[in-house]
Image 1 (cartoon, protein in one colour):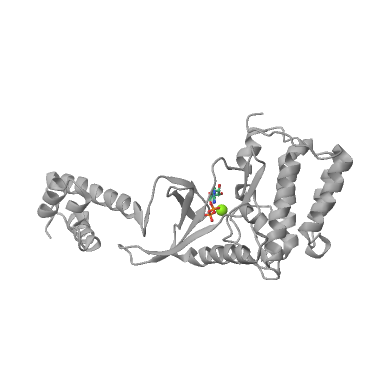
Image 2: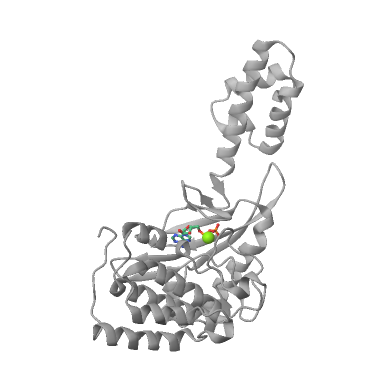
Length: 322
Ligand SMILES: Nc1ncnc2c1ncn2[C@@H]1O[C@H](COP(=O)(O)OP(=O)(O)O)[C@@H](O)[C@H]1O
Ligand SMILES: [Mg+2]
């Protein structure tokens, strides 16, 4: 295809189907891009300007088209951008998680494996604390031929991550509000650990809460490993990892318990009562072997500390607007 022909085609095309054709859209896209590429244009500045304009239109429309439909899913706006993937709202309380680079496919597979394992082995009462894996698919980029693994995850309305929660309470949260988050976080960890899975990235951005019903959901299982394995990938730039992760030693339930306690101390900030501060510190002793490794038992111990501090449990409404 010559540049003049490509320019005409782009100018005349009203829809993506006009522009890329129905049969071999990727091939048409490559032809257009090649014909309009600045290196191959005549020197006439007017033609070059027109071609550049057409080039930008082709590439922009191709990008947009590429992500609007994926398998049976119609992608809405990107709802979240994580450390390796973008999550698109696909309606019906579902998020489609698409890694930005095919080299992260192994991490997507880890997530799917962990969620399947927990769903198979876990106590059904606690399964709402982890996202349900609705679907897995592979997506081949028509332009590059690279294949990416995609996970479709269930979500629920009204979830907020702990970064957002902490921002709403710059002076720290009341420990009684942190109490239910911590209790439920230990439930998720107990659930996962019983199924033989270590989450491996219990960080504020991965702990979601639903304030009205005091719900907690632990997301992003891409970094998970079997109990006793080493975590090879860490979320970049996060200083909360315990020693065994940084030194690539085997991880265990205590790895998650330490990171969870870090999140909880950080939520309370200076408002942490001394007993809870000490309790949290005990959860993140340097050596994995010195730390508690049974989330269910730890939950009972936490309940005892809370009872000593505040008496019998009562429901305390929590909002993000203090
Ligand atoms: N099931 C879900 N429901 C609601 N929000 C979610 C869900 N999964 C992820 N998120 C949000 O999207 C962000 C990015 O997702 P995540 O799984 O962490 O992607 P990545 O592996 O790329 O870091 C999370 O930090 C969280 O805020
Ligand atoms: Mg993440």
